[in-house]
Amino acid sequence: MSTTTTAVRIEPAPPVVHTAAMLWLSAVAFGAFEAVLMIGKLLYEGTPVLDVLPQGGFRLAVFAGAVFLALKLKGGANWARWTLAGTLGVFGTISLVKEPIEWLLAGGSIAEAMAGADAMAWVFAASRVLHVLAVLGALVLMFQPRANAYFRSA
Image (tube, rainbow, N blue to C red):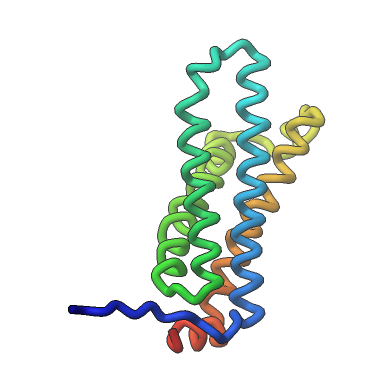
């Protein structure tokens, strides 16, 4: 008969890990807000509901996975730290900045975009900037010396 033991962490997460987890949760909140704005705009413009369901479902799955990983990160799961860094830290960040960078490289003007922006564009842009900053901040904090020591001790 074999018994399996599960390690339970008694040591609380250091502030850098706690803050990184909160930043990941903030990034999820910003992403969800952006998704609501985008899907709302598509529906307002007449896009059939069935056409936005796959995109909405995918985003919901990503958000749920990110929340799960952020909570595991806070609990000391090193695999969650590396999963967050590799998936959302790298590929997620690329997906957030790819379109604006391509637009700029194609000759887009920030000044013209700002001049022609309506309230919705400003709200979306502000949310996207905060979203990217939350991800980058979480990435930096997850690999600070105190965080590294916390994950090594698991």
